[in-house]
Length: 164
Image 1 (cartoon, rainbow, N blue to C red):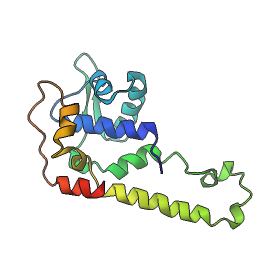
Image 2: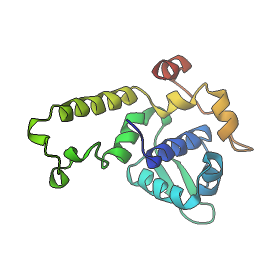
Image 3: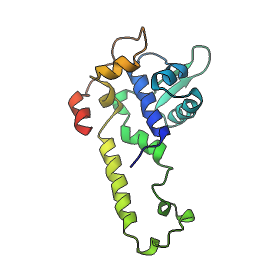
Image 4: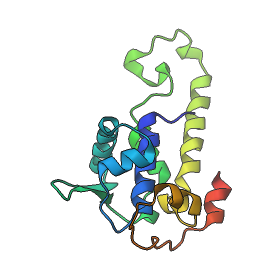
């Protein structure tokens, strides 16, 4: 299983916002911190906003911030929001399936089970599990003059590392 670039950028953006919790971050800051173009990131931020993961603010002092606490944003939920429209194989899209093996194929069911297991594994993690107690991540993503480290109730480094 492989995540699309959009999903990877969505998760990086959410981690960036979580590390800088309590502050509105600008698209340019996220792009620089996550090493991505602002144009590509704009599409991802739009998707994050529509899915209810971030709140975007327009204008001179605009930017984005988490729409809900980081421990209430599931990694699996984010992955599904961005990957849900990407079929694993052509046989998962009935109107475009040209595979002649489809009537007898058992692989499709195995692949569907594998995808569900993949998401179930991600469902056990939140953005807080990725960010909290992660000093190395903070060193990379924390903006100068950022407020004190975010509150990390419920997140433990053991929980995130156990999933890795």
